[in-house]
Length: 547
Image (cartoon, rainbow, N blue to C red; front, side, top):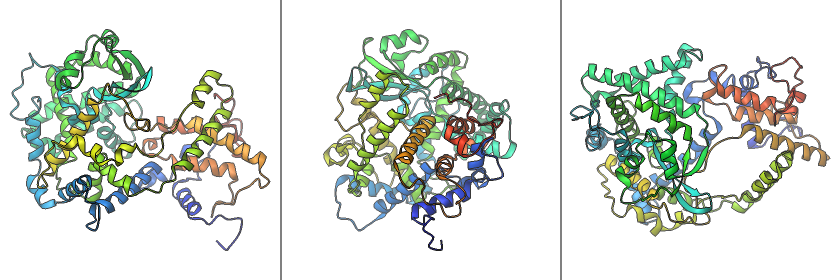
């Protein structure tokens, strides 16, 4: 660095400069395609190296969990700690797991509702109900289920837990196939769905998992032809319909989507835990999805629907079996276990020194900056934003041994049978959470994982407003340069931090919706056009902000 005072040489600055170097493609004009300028080199890396900033943070957390779970030198003798470490050791036992192979998964499928895809299934299309099948699967089908159950809070009492219906999220199955297609074939927007279905069918048909499920290749191929098409169709309506939350009564949902047998769906497994009347308040994520789902299933055969549910259940459970091609690694085991509350407790108690008060104070400043940047917004909306309270850290119940162990008191744990143990624990945790519907939250608790949406345009506007405020009140008017990037001014640095942070595999295809989203966020900011000196004819020149 040469000791130059104008160059920032802190660890954070060096890491940012390193990210700039690896991601920025300066052969692209930022005024015409800011995303490709920020991330062109990112997409030329191998796929396994294309980690965005959220994935980098996740990797760091998983490494910390690995250190906690693999240690044999610990004074923590609590049941949750012993359970977590025993389960991790069971996951890492390659010998026992390789001997078991796919057998535990196949046996589990045989004890759940089935479809013709599963060899030996006695399927009766005349009596089949996809609603009962979906409802009985619950957690076993993960987020791939046609209808998912979750929890929300009552609109008139934000402490009372209510039921929520949620569309599926098939990205874990479809995104790797889509990324592979984009990398190899570069399909256009009108070609992608057709090619996706074909490639997905081929991948599923050739997979070891489905060879075990249906050894007959012809039957397997025919069944997965329909399954792959249904996956693409379900994903399309789940991702293209407006994603909002509607608070309605259970009776109003039945009227809005009358062709779904909601009682069959809900009470297939949860009849002993949940009792809803038509006047019970619930919430629905993306109501339009369920309206279109009812039309899609009406056009689908019972066999196709049953096979879809068998296939997605198998894909959900596959992560817990031994795969010779992907032998269990510590990372894979941590990924299996990280959402289990005993493991969360172990992590929380080992990180007691977070300065939550300082984080809350910072978030309050962000809130005030947001309000200042949106003065044109209706006062009642700004008032609602001003009343927002931030939850930082974790619910205190996760530090209480008795509360954390309570849901698992009756779950058998076998250190020699990882599949049965981990799936039993996670299923019970999911069921226990649903059993709390109708009860009340603690003040520091939440019904589920926080939404991880990113409002990019608002975030940039808030940040630029805060920068302008700093610039006007500061006598310095400039920050130290990043090493190797002294040609950028402060605003350009700010924009490039944003651009390179949000490099994502979803933006691999030129013209993708993700690329357009980042470009739109940049073009809506006057500071971007000014500091990058964008000519009036350039694609991202700020003609008039839509914010």
